[in-house]
Length: 267
Image (cartoon, rainbow, N blue to C red; front, side, top):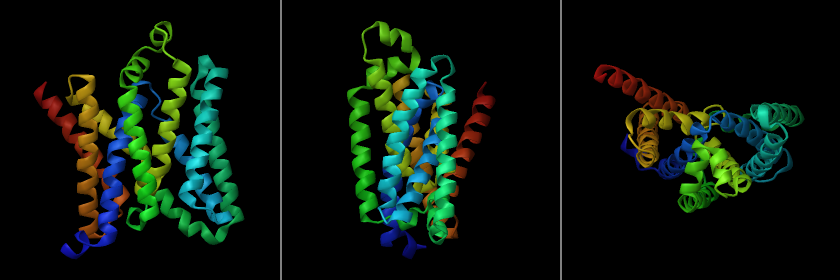
């Protein structure tokens, strides 16, 4: 057990997990409040298409996925403007395109499919120095943006029309939030996998919404819950040789169940 916990690959995994444990719930709070939880799955599918193209062309896979995710975030905002009364259409359209592109690239490069599987289900133990640098840069960028525009995002999340009337640049803020989401998703898929990344965005927020009594406390508690799940999930996965991404998500679900039972007992 001690050999695993003190190994270099585990320390890199822990560092990457802790960084994503900060950014995912930070962005997730605003997505959940705006009823855009499914955007995580959409951008994850698009990121996988980028990763697959990266393997196919020999380009850095995580970088290719990041580019695809950011491009998709611009497309989502463009479609949201075109279908104002049916905003969820933008998410459905981009998700379909992402799945289609990923399938196409899979068939073109059958030799690398095993490598792409790591991005589908998470391969946090394979994080290298370049991956950690990318995750670190994204973390600093996301935290800085959230701090700078915290009040604006707060108002946008609860009442977009009021934010527009008050003179806030709603279009720019919407695009900025979507781009930040794309950056977080594209860096998180190697840690928990594209099929599970949405859980890291939403479940910590779901738990904090049940316990916190203010918006700021909700944000802080969501990050704390995510970090507990990341640390606990990695330790459990390392000791018992389990899939770390799945272990983190299952621990989050267990925490949510305990919270729900506790709230029901109190009420």
